[in-house]
Image 1 (tube, rainbow, N blue to C red):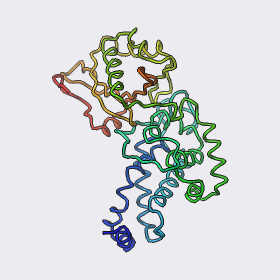
Image 2: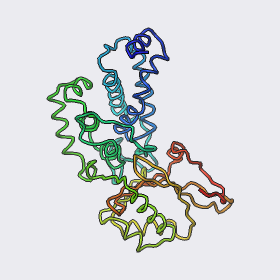
Image 3: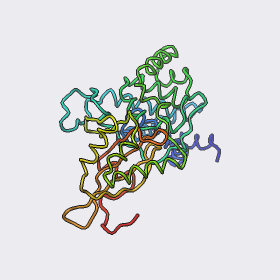
Image 4: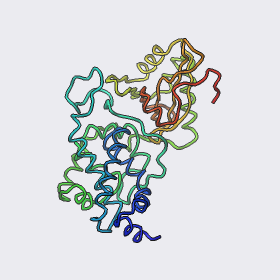
Length: 328
């Protein structure tokens, strides 16, 4: 069945035909919503609403570029969500106005499950797929005004032209170019994708393994040696952060000193990650204690982001508890 035939059937009300058109774009649209919103849960909800809107409007689609049309709908649903983010529940202990920047990463930041090798940017994109989904880059985007955030993602991440982006956002190419200049200037230097190298060599696993083993031994000097001088540890939704190898290593050791630690490997935002379990003092089981995402530079760790939420764990396919005899 040709795409034109499938489109004609979808426009005639065939739901299966509509799904056949949309499904090849669903994963990249999900990543797009996640970049703009910073939360996997919010991205899932907004994408569902956007695809429902696309289904209702498929009869008006002119047939030129389904991908661009879907991105237009998804982007505007993301922007509408951000305009109403005052309705977003605030975490305990957060007393500032919605959207106000705090130290550390945005409290709503969530890790994106798995790798991103199947996300293909357009010919004008400045960043490759791995760079554009890096956790610190997504966190940095959250500090930009919504319109600038959308423009930067559409232009620099996805490679849409200024004219295409203007059409999606209902503005002019001049306004898009102006917003892009401001967005690039406002993005914190340490959040630029080019400043977040994600190694793909086997050395990556060796660095993470050395760090995990040092952590399990509470080997403070080894942990310090494996962290870059500008290393950061953040723990969304908690507002604090720790900077520098000494401060980070001491915090990790003091937090878990005397505990037996169990790590299971995974991937998040295209980066190496570990799921941490600690023993339950009352039962012969391991209990989930956190998901740690690693950002590497060469043979060292330059960033650690720790998530404690159970919702993130579920998306990564790990259980909340393990039997004490479990062997990965």
